[in-house]
Image (cartoon, rainbow over all chains, first blue to last red):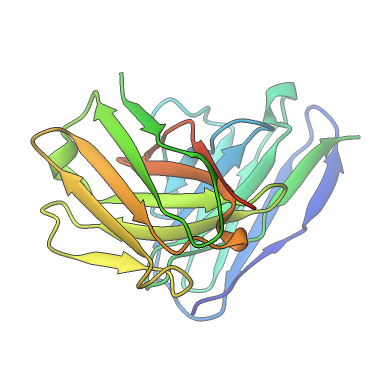
Length: 107
Length: 112
């Protein structure tokens, strides 16, 4: 199975900060990676697919990059509604696997 | 507007069965692979199974293979997950996922 290692597992940041979350795959997955945001008690919402393509309706402060084994999700200027848990997902090979999540909290 | 609405969750004893359903609307269901993803209480996300657009290919995580069966009805725009021989570790919110969208989830609790 491909292991997806997210870092950090949590972070504290202030409104307006630039935030970067990393996901590393245990083997190459091309660009078969998606990013999701989940708020407490809610279903996840897709932010990015194909590693760097912004889902329709998602604010442009979110961006994704990377290919192969290393990927990043960047929030250019953190907004109050962005405090949530973020997950990456690889769908290159079965079983599909998620990262363990990164909780973004208010500093 | 895309909608995925799950139903069928509930409390079941270990060894029991449950059938989850997902009603899809707002997109051409037959054009998309569909998946089930679960989340145990307080834990992360786990992909469970998916099914090809025409239903002819199905994939499962090892922990459910042989116990769970995914199926779809393109005429009805519906997705199902038949869960047999349930275990305590299957307790989770189960989400229907497809076309980049997620349903609101349905809670399955396996307990005596």
